[in-house]
Length: 383
Figure 1 (tube, rainbow, N blue to C red):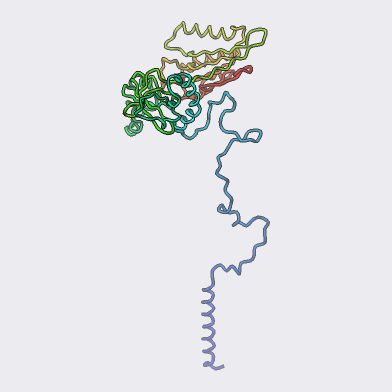
Figure 2: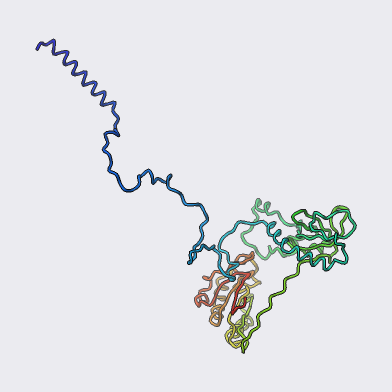
């Protein structure tokens, strides 16, 4: 072969090598077609189990399931636990409470008003709603609604919050029942329902004897400025329902009995008379009434007395003294203890039960039960 014919072949070979190198460089790093197929598996594909495709649980409120399978709320069951709520409910305005109270008591108050003033006021003078009241008339009218008292000297809570004057505890000096804290001679009295509010003209002494939220029927004369002039004795309220009669004991001997006490805490320093009174109480519970005292209900004041004042912290010594006394009483009969105004519980009603861990000796007997205030109970079929 000649040298001239070998050169074109070498150029052609080098050209093919460059084209092959370019083709190799243009290929992707991962070729799906060149990847071997995976064997089929019985489980779901990974893409089918991603969090985006998994159905989320419903956002319904969880409920505690009882032994029988029925859901139950976090509220103590039975009449004794009616006021022992362990969950926080949404805040409700007083308007809803007042409307329900007016709906239930309006008819009873009107019956009392018609029985008392029926011969004095014409039937047309008994207004079904306050909006039917006609100002400028000289005849007497009777309106029924909710009393509202405007407290002129009451401090603005929002302003107190802005000024950072709110306190974490309430002392005896901050007792709202002290004169001059909330009420004053400039307070105004109104009566209202779902239709309108009507001003009542009374003396400051009469206004001081009422509070907001009472369902009442008012007899008065319209004034020129559209308000109602009412005399001190022209207010009518709903009567309390008669108490249920207690069942008669049919046994041959008297009993059993329920004893109620309060104010067991030591009032101040060590007083021999107070200690003797507690000893007589223990002796009565254990031996008195033929030993038929089945339950002792302590109606507040077992840890702190009224002399301590609301909001004062309970000392370890006061808790220890109460624990020893309750242990002596629990050794004789069942003891149900309610919190009082000065005891270490919340100040607003209903008060939650005292923590049982405060009473190490009395709580270990099993006869002591801390209950709420108010409190409902049943014993021997009597509630």
